[in-house]
Image (cartoon, rainbow, N blue to C red; front, side, top):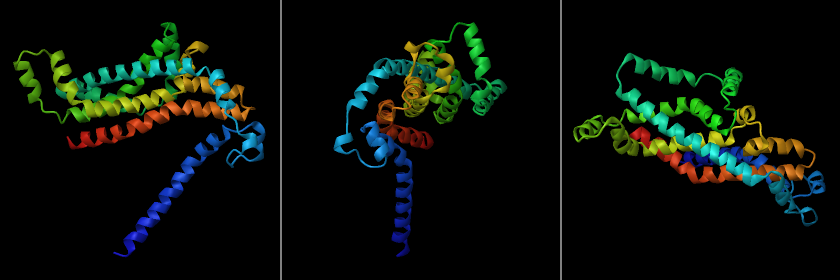
Length: 275
């Protein structure tokens, strides 16, 4: 009994050490974003002192980053991509669960196997095909995200739908519902916990993605926040005060979203396992 508090204290200390390790880069970026270039080179680890403290870094970085347009581009691509992924993969998973054939089993394992294919092995043929179709634009990018996000989403929905009794659907069909009505009015509302999880996971992935937008989007007016931040950081790499302020501005939206959504991720996973 006496050893338990000591053991708990050890875990607390270990957790605190790991937290400090993970938070150290954020601390360095944040404090230096308020300093002048001279203040950064004089003391990169210390808090900004009055002679070298400034808010102008954020004002200038916000303007040069064209943050409003980049934010709206990221928002458009993320919202539409995630919405299409949720609708199509929930339907696909439902049909795979309810259709007991060899083909449904084959398709399920095909979705599972697709998770193992690295993006780098298909990115050049994909860009070549989409270029011939004239879809190297945000609309084409949305459909690409549907393809890459389907595997994990179908797997998550598939495991959740298996625990929904088929008798609910049979009763709805007896009452006069067609297959589409059964899905939208009976099944889809029951998928709310796992839908929230799928929405959040895909939102964080698509919002932070850099490689696919870099290959697809070739006009400055279409740049997402990660893509704009890449060019911005390259342009201002010698002006660390502006570059670090730009990094903080770029990180703020997804950090706020994560803190709001983290409880829904846990809730969706736990409800899906208990249901």
